[in-house]
Amino acid sequence: MSQTAAPSGDAAAHESERHATWKELFFDLVVVAGIAQLAHLAQDDPGTHGLGLYSVLFLAFWITWAGFAVYGDIAGDDARTPVLLFAMVGLAVMAASVPQIRGPHATAFVIAYVALRWFASGIWQRGKVVLDWPLAQQGLGAVPWLVSLWVDAPGRYWLWAAGIAIDLTTLLLSSAELTLKGAQERLARGRDGRKGRDGSRGRDRDAVFVLQPARTDDAHLSERLGLFVIIVLGEGVIQIIDAVAGLETWTPSTAVTALGAFAVLALVWAVGLQYGVAGIPNLRAATVAPRIVLLLHAALTGTLAALAAALGVAVEHHDEALPLETRVLMCAAVAAYCTIGVVTAVLVGTNVRWMLGWGLPSIVVPILLAVLGTNLRVGLLVWLLAAVLFWLVLHSPGRPTPWERPPRERAAKRPAP
Image 1 (cartoon, helix red, strand yellow):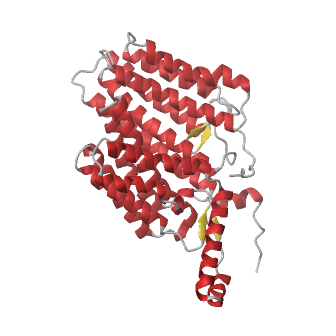
Image 2 (tube, rainbow, N blue to C red; image 1 turned 90 degrees about the vertical axis):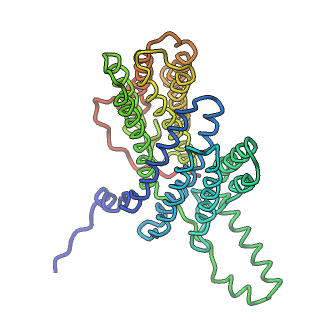
Image 3 (cartoon, rainbow, N blue to C red; image 1 turned 180 degrees about the horizontal axis):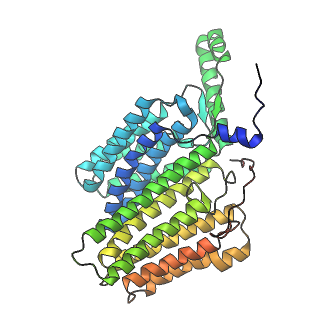
């Protein structure tokens, strides 16, 4: 029998590369509905209070989705379909509750959120420690949400915000080493407690029990995060099309504004997905710890969903003055997106020249347009924001220009968490 030669390094890497499975893609369908409802919330109330509530609800939805996305990433083919289907139902309830979140549907949202957080913490095998997603086995952030069931507005909103703040702080501060150390300490305390109660039997039982650290597959997780960004950009396209379809008369200003809005989305796609990783602009593979990538992704997608809502309103007002709150939202969203790109550039070690010449101007210009753009026509304002993003496409740090072929990147060593 003839023997087949072992594949080369590149071929072996290609064969072992994972992609999103059909059940993961089906699970992500619930994101489409969730983003649509959340974008409409931002569109209907772009003021300070409305955007505050939008931010809290978006992060609650995203944290829930991310928990099960990490589960699918680590479990791979062993991910249980009933788990993902149950999560879809819960996320669907959360999405359906958003339009009436200030009314009786708030209770349904909270119950679904708390139930999914509790459920997500119990799907992991005993002894497995998820190092790259500290929230997998920590549910403290869900406690304020549970308490809010007995608190009226606006107090309940502050409790929701407190719960999200706890979770974000946990993600920011709980490194892989700290997560593993905490699990080891809890295991040691449990052994000491059992030792005092039943002596040698506890020692025999614990002798076969060891912790199993679990890490994410960075390439696969990046693909899932990138698909989430595509879904958000898709909502932006839907907003633009719906706005144009709802106009009785199409004029040249309709085309100018709609094409400008589409250009903004296309340039966001280029900056984040063509010249970034996981949809995050300027990010390079294996240079930032996964938990930080997830934090950046939460901020990024929340910003883009708000931008999608603002672009839809801009097209509706193509031939008249854009409402102040919508103009500020649209410009602030572009500034926030560019800020994420600058933060990422700092994390990967971009030089000062790029920061001063391209990074900081991309933040300052949208802010100036928000403050001084009262008399600008809507189409011109949208195209000026597109120009800011095009500036970043032309000068993405460490990336080729759009008309150059990207070089093959060398495999990078995974960063310390």
